[in-house]
Amino acid sequence: MPITAAYLGIILIWSTTPLAIKWSGEGPGFLFGATARMAIGAFLCLLLLRLMRMPLPWHGAAVRGYLAANLGIYGGMICVYWGAQYVPSGLISALFGLTPIVTGLLAAGWLQERSLTPARIAGSLIGLGGLWLIFGGARPGAGAGPGLAAVLAAVFLHSLSTVWVKRTGAGLPALTLTTGALLIALPCYLVTWLLLDGRPPPALPPRALLSILYLGVFGSVAGFLLYYYALRRVTAGRMALLLLITPVIALLFGHFLNGETFGAREIAGTGLILSGLLFYETGERLIQAFRKSGA
Picture 1 (spheres, helix red, strand yellow):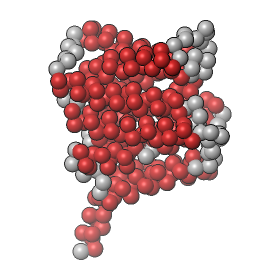
Picture 2 (cartoon, one colour):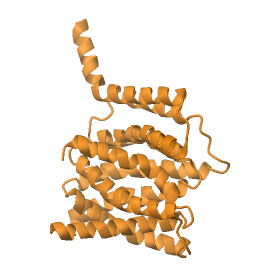
Picture 3 (tube, one colour):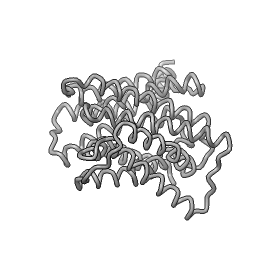
Picture 4 (cartoon, rainbow, N blue to C red):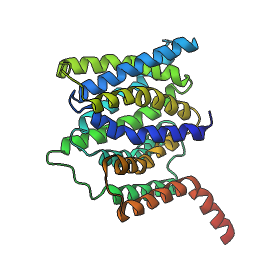
């Protein structure tokens, strides 16, 4: 698969995930929605392994890879699900725009990646400026401080998981890594649901049911497969850069699905984000070319 196709798939899935997470908790509660999503994902991954006759190793290196991925799938994801009760989906996407900087810091220290050159820092900051311009006017409801803290914790755990997978589990096939991580995550979700709720919903609203199915099939299987496939082929810092694009696409989905406005603030913010992405990718070469022309 071309890496560009994997990128586009990840962007499309991640752009729809915050809204689907909110919808999946309408009625059944966020813990049931998250647990059901992971159960569907684990079943589908096991089925794919069986159909493709791929082994699921449990040696030390493989388990370390599964645990590294589980840090994001359980630790980060459950923080997002809880925080989504109090924080608007657009603001969640904006906060996840911090991931490139957090991942870059972790990757520079742990993987010795050259992720924090001046040009890349500047590109990330320009992109974050665009996110702030788009979402800076949003104000979470009263008492949403813990929700914001939970989302920020999810940002850190997702970044740490990305770097840890790159270090310990990047040699595993994407399907193997995703399946092993989901099999570890599912009992964690089940125990959490049983301890904190444990009551199956009497009925599932159609939108919640469809959201759970969508997240189970695409969010937990296709999204993770594409993500870990791409992670094997690019740096951790560059993978995190995807999270500067998804809020913009999420804004478009919100506009067409929920009738949200897309005015001058959103257009200007989108331009800043795209400029930041461009400078992140080409800034070093532009600076070197400028220096050579000056010499």
